[in-house]
Length: 444
Image (cartoon, rainbow, N blue to C red; front, side, top):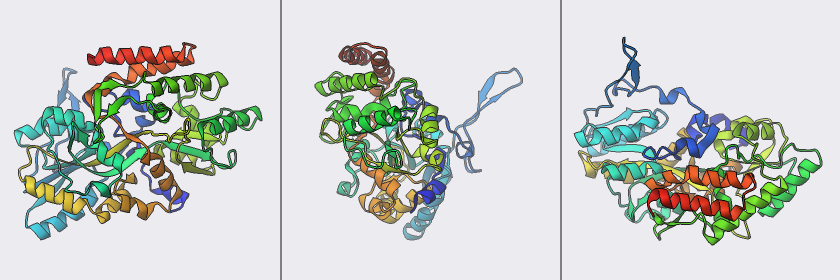
């Protein structure tokens, strides 16, 4: 697949970071900044089989909420948005033919699925299976509406980060199918060689500005300071937000913002700010404009930004190493959940594991909505495209966005830490203060 074809098939809104916000902790606005403001008709429509959850104004000027989604009449009910529904209907028909059970795929706006499951499942009106983002998991588990899912030894068929994303307190709750993350987008004219290290990237970026070839050294949004886009430097320096257990789940009792590696990352941001490499005036729009117009050699962004870069010759690569270590960005993962109130749990598990846990299904999900396939063999089928390969390789060293409720206490506190560094506060002091604030908020 050529770069131009990739741009043609990517639905912009579908590649926006829908997996980044935990609905229970309301972190979405803090995580994704302006690129997540994109909206499309895909989140506005539902089929005649469902009732959309909306608000209408009555004659007194007050708002009224319409009926929530109601379960269709079938042996197996699946909830998915309009992008994924056509793929699921194909496999649902196969399941009907083989199992002799009726299956209905109901269309529900993506952003409405988790709330409707939490509200409707306990009353018997929810789905048996639903498609969603891994960082819904904290709210789903807390509400008791999602069932554990044993992958039956298939874990090694998927990228580690994808499997880890669906682990909560040592238990797996989903089958992954797609991942998304940031990577290094490089203007091949301004920067002909891939920067292997952060130091290399700083040198090339600053030189481009000094020579008058660029307006900014890197399109790396810091207005506002961006915890999500900065995390790869933290992990490369040996820091972390919360420690991970062996199965990849997060331990909220161990905050790593002011760990040795975290403080090293703070020092690096102080140095990058002092050299002018990172700039507090760079917003998402500035990043887009500067890279799209060939006025910066690099952009730190995700696939949602690529449609704006059609007029630039670029490639996508893993993020450079930090202090000799691989850089690990946050990774969002999407997959299939089974309701704890499924009317036919065995049939639900069979559909998810045996029908959607196949290379064919994972590739069809990719074609419908090009997130990087979570299944290794499916990824290998599409990795001849340099864009897919670049994001995939960047995500291989990444870390799943924490789905634990405590993550909601991180965004603003850590954002303030970065802002303080840009305003001249001692970097170590800025991160230590952010870590103390997080601990206080989560009761440590």
